[in-house]
Length: 395
Image 1: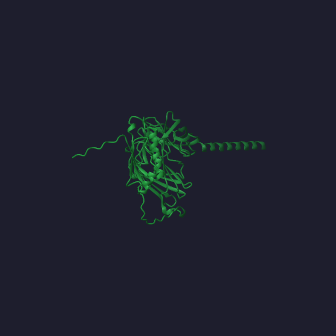
Image 2: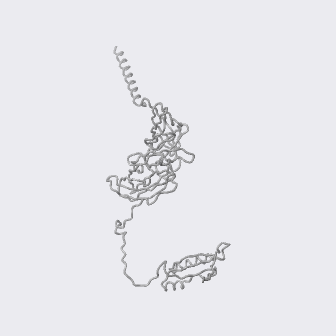
Image 3: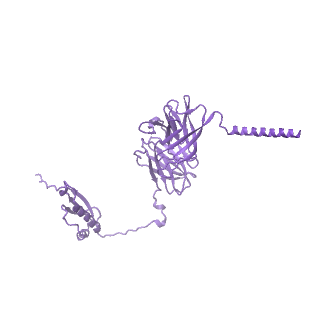
């Protein structure tokens, strides 16, 4: 009887253990109505999320992308996160609601966007939602370089740059964390809803007319930690709309105090499909220089006669042949003694109208330059092929 009770106790323990294991599996299984989707992503060019070099791309752990799926006529982006990273290639995984399939409902095009955000899809193209504030100090954004990709099979995506990028480098920053506000003086927006279009020429931000305009859309704000007095910000801008005239303001993120501000005097023009490096250095302020770097110069009044440099009266000299004599030191000294420091040198190239200038003539010119420098005299330099005859005076 005792053995029978022992057997029953053992069986009960096995059943309880099995029950615990079943409940544990249910708790770790995907939520009902969702399934895991895995894809591969690669990127090329100088677009990257971690700017450790000038040309090397690399995904990073924690990078997030938005991948487009559809269910019937409904389109929806789902967020995928890096599962494994191998430089420019990475595996991303994300949970997708049951019933959704990769691609757009109308065209079937399989889009993906980086970084993940509240992106949307509208009539054949995705709309990139560019937030007006990026907190690099707390969020997982190494650099704001928007990328897009499309796929044939929905499992392999190749990312490309979506726009040009300006790099602003601040040096000599006296704060541990800063807030940088970039405002475009022109009407072209930097943030907000920006559509993307796939074309035969390129795939970049569409023209401004596709989206609404407002003061908020012309601003981008970045929050970043300062390292060794330096802070870097990567500002995206449409490659074929390089009308960019920014006002750049740097604040201490802890106190809100304005550290530096600079306003562009003219548009940043030119095709900006790649990265343009712009360095913003501290403004030069003599009052802030340490005493050891400041020099005081005291000038005293003088009635002395001195040679007026680079302008005023001058001596003229013509050279028509390579056999002519080089300027002598004594002649140049006499010019200085007369209170002048300027010469007019006229070189006639009559012998070289149909040929290259001879080496001997070039040597003459070079030797004259050396003599002028040694004698402390500058020249007005002129070249001509012929001497025009004097015209008769009209009566």
